[in-house]
Length: 391
Image (spheres, rainbow, N blue to C red):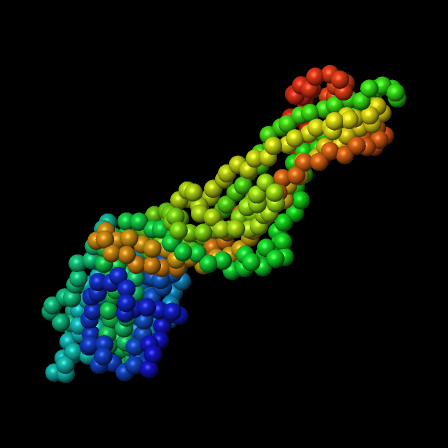
């Protein structure tokens, strides 16, 4: 039968170095075997509760980073409270184990005693009476001090325990793959998250009397908006190490962007790399706003309304990611991360000038400069900068 324990537990294949006590695991019935492990989600074990009797450890329970206790295994002895020890996920600990020693001549049949040592802390002990445990301790020198998993077996008492330590300290964490819950293709087909954005609005007016010469206007302004990419993680545990996760160069993330030519202006959510290794990134989207009258110019008692618009696209989605951890011994392993991603991108910049009646110009509108039609090209209006984003 399959082992009981935490969902998606993995106690068999991983970056482990182990220390075990009790009878061999394969001598236990399958239904009594268990596995406590969440290291593939980045959470390690950070606590233990032990219920003990005279001859053996009767029951155990383990805590994960985040203060979440797993299942209890074994049978509770009457009127016995558990002994408990917890530590922070960034702490390093050593564990020593002993087999039990029945006094009736029977062979060893259980885990007898556990001790936990941590620098700067008093040694913690739990288990059978000192005379009821084997003389020799069971210990493995683990370089990391991090428990990724515990494999064991328990019926009337705890017959087997195997602590799975991380075999070497983690030196580097990198997100190497990401899958978004939202389908980018559907977002493009339905234009989801897209809305018009007014970048600027300027009025020009020719107040000369009817019969006067037409006027011209010709200005160009550089408009910029900020594209942004932001990733947040809902998994705060990084296998017991205070390391920042870097975003690998192969991770593709979606953002609205232009991809057309001078003839066709097309845009969509498309995948690109994060240029930095951080979880946030900004860049500048630029647009040359050209405002100009036609050859005939702007007639007297007429105005022109010039606007600059773009499409603003916001892509929002939860994600599942793969994080690759590189160990000090050069080996690697992966665990899984969850989070949320949001990008804001601008595309499809469009400028337009329409001739209107003077009465259509708002009374409080600021106007750009115009020049007589026969005059040289108008100078750039320094006042136009004030009209950007003023719809």
